[in-house]
Length: 142
Image (tube, rainbow, N blue to C red; front, side):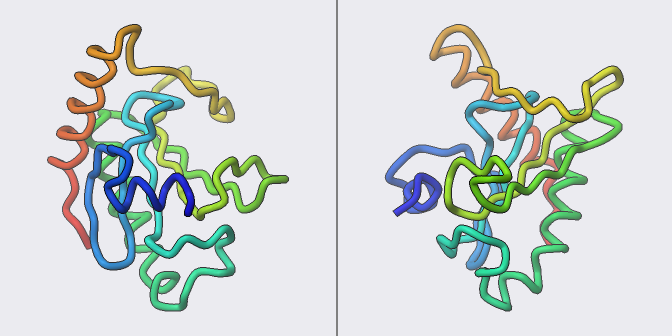
């Protein structure tokens, strides 16, 4: 069972944007930028090529809708949409996931270093709740 499978199952807490029968989206707890969100299939497969056909078929709609929601919530002019398909590509968790990273003016487009939402656990929880609410309020679904 992957870390993401445990989050999806509720064994580990996660700040979800949405959940449906094929996909979920939740905040990355070590974001490259505030509002960094992950789109994750419920199927615990490591590679895009292993996704079931129905899950693959609707992936584009989710990418488009989630990109718009993250951009709007972060008031960002751009969003980096990133997939690392395999460990050699930098994938750290062997479960397909797509990153949505808000980008503002002067951001380094190819910098994806993790950070924390705050210095204290209380500040981290507060910021994660804030960003979860902000992105959920922009999520229109598909």
